[in-house]
Image 1 (cartoon, rainbow, N blue to C red):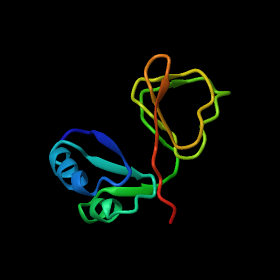
Image 2 (image 1 turned 90 degrees about the horizontal axis):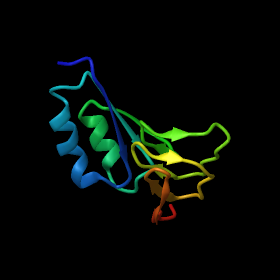
Image 3 (image 1 turned 120 degrees about the vertical axis):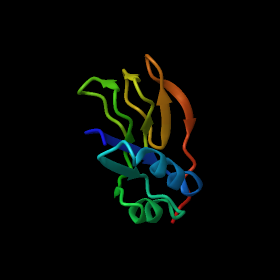
Image 4 (image 1 turned 45 degrees about the vertical axis):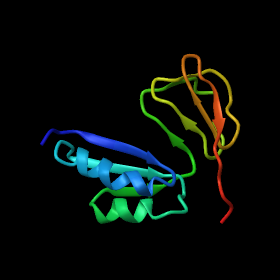
Length: 110
């Protein structure tokens, strides 16, 4: 096993999370699941497979560039290697260089 830590960002990924974790567990030392308060069983499945699971309404991909004065609002998802150059509205998905709007996230009220 490699000395590799994997971070998986989720929101309602119940149908995919088990396959994802099983595929990376042979090579990853640590698996972290950061869930954006899914309404399905994604977080429970991740925990049952041994992943360290957390819930956080701000889910940000690694390998992104962002000025320290940029403000990310609740529920923002930033694509890998994105260059964030301005504030981002709540529950928005952005990506690219420079980061551009991709779509609004659909969040069901609890």
